[in-house]
Length: 342
Image (cartoon, rainbow, N blue to C red):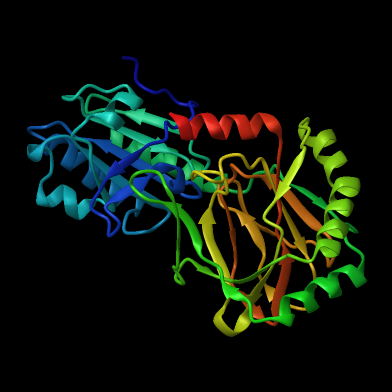
């Protein structure tokens, strides 16, 4: 069992924890630095001391730039001090997280993960001045938080009259509040309301002429660019809807990925087409890479991998209307089917 090393992608996991939801999916930890603290089942005093010193040096924890996860395996691992020093305590009784990261049950280790979910540094109780070393590594991560985003922005995908037709279609009947797509403990898709995380209204496109007009323009103007830039051929399209983020409730969408639950794993690329530009806020951004926001002109689009963590900032004036389809191909459909079958 070989421990993770600097430069490796951080192994992703879902594990029981002390949050209100009871479980944590580490793929949602992107966009900020994270320190994983692996605590031994007994005698964690050395780890406590090192963690306390790191927090003091780095001024982190408590939802600051670096979130601290303590990984405990057995009741002796968790002291009141560790619980106080941690943002989230992961209960790793089945050793899932330890195994993924290459540590034995009795090992003490500190793993610093950067906002792109890559290993930045690994230290242990025998590492010389480990707390200061980790704090310096965190400082370096924070200084390099604006990297190029692997997204494609195109203008003139939809003509102004098409944009206006789609906006009128949205308002023809009352839209519905858009749910968050997640899944139950047994893996079944689950749509739930969470207005602290997502405030958006949707109307599904059912007009065949509008669907055909939209698909035709995406096939002619977007699909060839996806093939050229991402070296990927897409053959299908789903979720044809018009969405609205309204400043009246500061419409927004928290950081998420578009292909992590059953029913969505076939998605390859998201196509976010703005239908208007007379609003403020509402930028699309990618926390793993940069705080820089993307805002295509009316009729323009941002195209990006569904695996990228992304979010929509609150709309502060007016309304942002958008058309938000996904594209996929036969290989991604087969992959998704395989994931669901076992």
